[in-house]
Length: 240
Image (cartoon, rainbow, N blue to C red; front, side, top):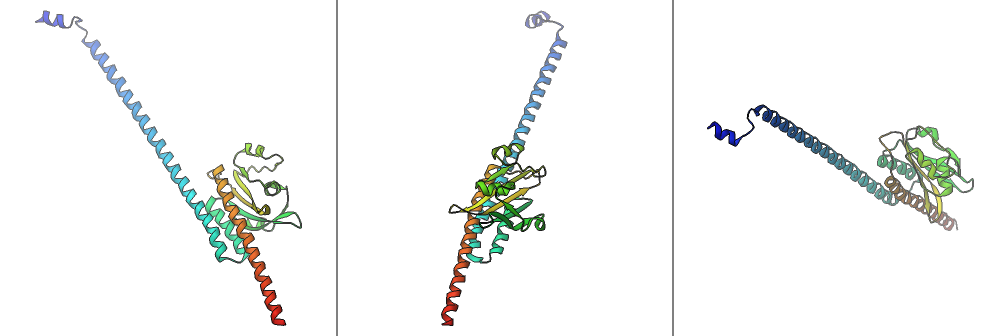
């Protein structure tokens, strides 16, 4: 019998080597499984992060669509210009989670833009403040009729001649309001939180909103002018 075993397993007294070898194989295999498990966990976390970002992006998109639809509602129900100005800045704060939003209107006679509405922090500080064309970020946007997105220090290089730099300003968007090639004003959206950094898609959304806001302002101005003229004519006929 021993001879038969010897013929079947010629390496006698190697049991310890086999046990150690098998143990090493088991350890390596367990380590491989643990590594794969960590890889699966990391993939799950990444998929969860991507899903959360997609959900957040969808919510932002929904808020923007709601903001754009609000402009058409304002046109149909509001006739007071100041109420429209205030509603525009309020919508910006609610939609873009900004520290402060301000609306500046262009005065052709003085070639200046003046703050007519502010929502958020520092309202009393900047309300009715004036800037000449080319002064600051808003003045630059008004003069060049160009939207501005500032989220990184390198973004300033995209706008030649813009020297205004505020270290407390993590991100900002400034969009001119233009209706039929006519400058109406400037819409400013500013963030002071590292968690709120605006991207190009945010700027596109704000441009769409600004186009509707500018049209809303001009429409209300024209309607008020027409009502005023009609009232004058009615009074003139009554006087006759």
